[in-house]
Length: 113
Image (cartoon, rainbow, N blue to C red; front, side, top):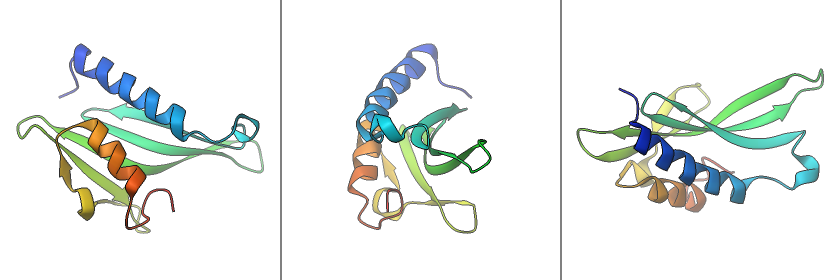
């Protein structure tokens, strides 16, 4: 089930603020940038890279999935096996803001290196 209109507006507002803070310098954004997408009940943060042939590559960095029945966000990271795995330091949290703060803290270095 997708987000309601109000929930989706809240997600977009929160994510736009976060992405604006995390984006690289304007002069390199053509080669490297970050963004996000909303897929069902999940928000996926991705890195957007320009390849040598001019095409674009979107590489997922993190995924937060809203579990409405439990009223929690579950946080995932993509391992080398290209599957989403629960992020143990912050497996569940109550708000998207706490998810994003956890991504910034990232004690395991899974998201931003």
